[in-house]
Length: 353
Image (cartoon, rainbow, N blue to C red; front, side, top):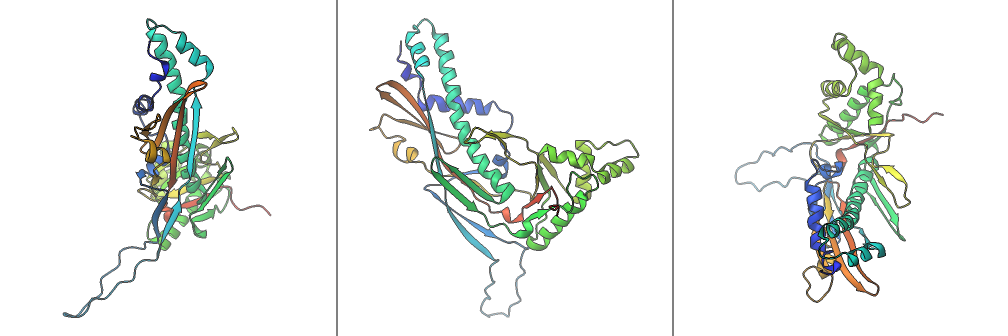
């Protein structure tokens, strides 16, 4: 029979992962929609941060006069170095022995074991995706990305203004809170500051239930619906569209496991986020050392395949003990071209004295 090592290749695992991804009916993470992926070489990303208050008019000019130079909108160029992430998995002794003991006539057993190995190794690629999502959701909910592990620490402050980080006039869990009034007030501020009205909301389902219990919203739905409309999810979304021009509400309850093994929500239950239409920025993936130095390099035993538009999947063999190592690495960071049009709402309300 063929050596089991012949089955565990970067190319084969990449194909397997892509098949799993293609079988999913929707994108697994909200951040994939808000921060679409882009590629670049190297470690640094540069993006423009600036305020946009609408189009500027042209000045009048006499014929044959020199052209007047318009002043540029106030903006800054942000340059950031992207962090590097990597981890690996080995084939354990038990699986290796099973593969060695299976004869050529037991092809189905070989396939079952290889599939289990590929499923385990796919967790590495999923971990890379989770890492990108955590950074995007940190940015979306705090304006800051802070990550630390394995003796490394990075902090990226995207410079959100004070008027973008607001506190509800009263805790939204209070049934008498003016939730609609809060949203409209924050929208008005953003129109004044940027010329753009944020019309989408992102929150946990736990926060959304506060809207379902809110006195004003429930009573309005009852009156407008002549007693026939309940404060259910669809009715509230329609009502916010009519009252505040909200075009969509994303209820995002996905979780991840952090470096300490603790399960965390990507979005905490004390915030709601107002965002504008369109992309908020991009998820940039740089060129890993594996892609730059090993991909297509005939002088190395390592095999490299690229998945998820820039994640490097690398496999190689070690002779003593005999084993196959699968490593996943990425260089990634989101940019925030439109983060200046986002409002982060602390829905717990003012701190009590």
